[in-house]
Amino acid sequence: MSKKLFYNLLAVLMLASLVLSACGTAAPAQPAATEAPAKKNYTYADLTLCYPQLGAESDWRTANTASIKETADKLGAKLIFSDAQQKQENQISAMRSCIQQGVNVIALPPVVEDGWDAVLQEAKDANIPVIIVDRSVSADKSMYVAHIGSDMELEGKKAGEEMNKLLPNGGNVLEISGTTGSGAAVGRAKGFREALNANIKILDSQTGNFNPTEAKPVAEAFLKKYAGQIDGFFIHNDGMAQAVVEAMKAAGVKPGDIKMVSVDGTRGGFQLMIDGWVQADVECNPLLGPQVFDMALKIMNGEKIDPEILTNETVFYPDKATELLPTRQY
Ligand code: AHR
Image (cartoon, rainbow, N blue to C red):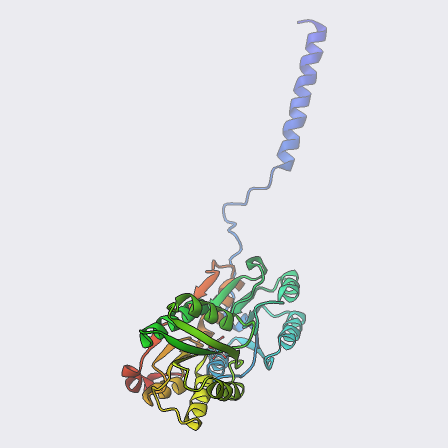
């Protein structure tokens, strides 16, 4: 072997050993056989959940609040609860306060769909997961971890189908809707229109903000303006349906003269069915506490969660109302 060839070979060998040792250093350390990915074992006692409730406008909402509070108590979790009195800005301030306090999870029942991006981003930046509860938001799904609640559009569709059955020959209906811009009102109005037969005309639609006190004057004005032309009412919740019935009684309308479809399935709604005013009540279930806390703990422990949990709901009718009323929890 020539001297030149010998030195070339030596240089190649040295370079190869350098490369190999460098590769060895850069390679990620393999976990020892005993090391497993860190398993989190948080319990409910470690969980602080923030629930910026949107208000107290209905029996549905009261039942939802009770479900959240009772579940927290039962499980021994800490709850930071507030009442935004129907104001989005109050819900946003409550969320910001929860972010500052470093809660583990925020569960938000949004009063309206739009306008959540900034505060959701703040929660994300602070590594606080947000579960959207009850109504929906229009923000991108990447801004929150999951939604637990009802399919509001499906509820509206069911209401439309019930109205079709009640008015087989068509007719004129009026709608008193929930809070303008809320996922519940938007979804129910959309689904109702999609399902309604072409021979049924919506004469008018006004909001009652899911609130009986606000719905009553709307019903009174409707009954005056459209006297003699109304075949049906679609009311977005039972509390407002109770107010509409008061207005109908005052206007001399008898049970069943004007067909009524309502939403929620509260005890008040059941009583309206028993008394002959409401012919179909589309269920909307407020008892979401157990699902919310279960998901919150799973998130803390890094467990897999379902990003969309929609409640299975039915339609209630007068024929079973008397039997079912004592079993109703709200
Ligand atoms: O978002 C759910 C709706 O809000 C319920 O139907 C209504 O009663 C409540 O206030």
